[in-house]
Amino acid sequence: MPSTRQFPVIKKTVSEDLTIHGSEDYRFLDSGDGCRLEQFGPHRLIRPCPTAYWRRELPDLWETADAVHERGRGGEGRWTIRRSLPSQWPITWQGLRLTIKPTGFGHLGLFPEHAAHWPWLTQRLSGAQGEEPPRILHLFAYTGAMTLAAARSGARLCHVDAVADTVAWARRNATASGLDKHPIRWIKDDVMKFTAREIRRHRRYEGIILDPPSYGKGPAGERWILEQHLTPLLERLAPLLSDQPRFVLFTCHSTGFSPALMRNLMADFVATAGGNLQSGSMLLSADNLRRQLPCGYYVRWTPSKSATTTV
Image (cartoon, helix red, strand yellow):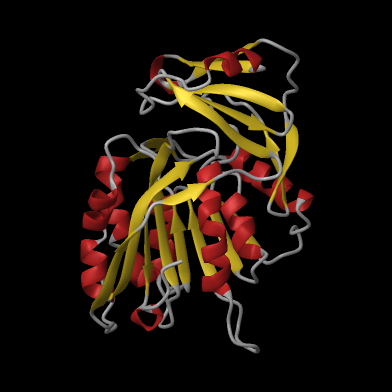
């Protein structure tokens, strides 16, 4: 049932690209010719990047890669190992201990560009002394880096992903980061089914994070197709938010998306909720490179009382 609560009208729309320059254990090294070169801990990896049409800036550096992922039919591919490479290894990012593990789809267990949102999350989750910890719903939560960034800021999390192995990976990251005792509900479920049940149960959250993929499968074979299911999911945002909401963070990496498209997708929610929107690209950058690498897009919503917050 649609929410009947009254929210203030939209106050502000801000456009701002967010850039990540790296961390103690991560470096963006170069991009071009349809690929990206990155270093995770001691290992350098080449992965496909269809948007990187330009020429490589540092072609000789690519010869130092430990492994190359080549995409196959249906998205899954294979890794060609050039030098010794373990099946998995730990890295540290802004105090979190995370496991990197090359998968058949070329994923590694971390989207570095998402770290651009971590300081903003900390700010949004800080509250007056004595308040109840904010409840945050994280959908398509993957291996939990964003979940843990929110948890260490004091929030109570509901972490939802459809893949059992991925949820287990996230829990191991929580243990390695010293957050395994934190109040986190680890849920293996189809996002559409889970959110429908949460609405029926009248469970509400102060914040919602979602990073939907282009395609996916639920634990019982449910299919997630972005073009078919995203709009119905976004229509559930307002009913899932509490009477004292703090934010919605919506990111996406699918080809063809843009900040304007994501603002349009949020239009109906904003018409109900009012507040402020910030949107833009998520970029990887290095001081010695001319080009930044676009790695997806985001839109953030905050209620109107945070009109001055555009971090």
